Image 1 (spheres, helix red, strand yellow):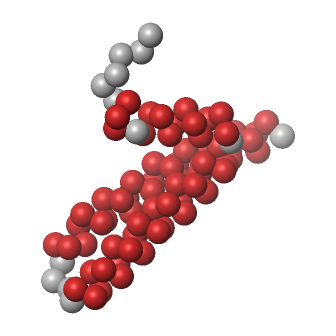
Image 2 (cartoon, helix red, strand yellow):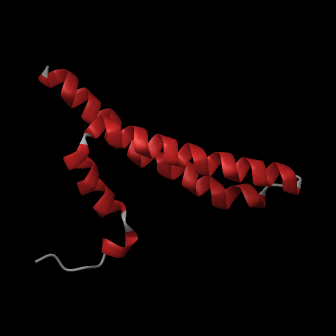
Length: 83
């Protein structure tokens, strides 16, 4: 039971981090020489995939760990001092 839970948490954390690849793709796609329609479709697809992968990872890690990592991934919290 514990080993299954540990595997789920590791996979969930990986998915949450991996969603950043799709986010980065939204900035890289416009640099390619594609038609505007193709760029719009690719960027939209990338953003949708980013959300799906991130939330799937959140479901795997559980509520407590998800809120902890979500706070750490929020750029607004990066430079705040912890009490």
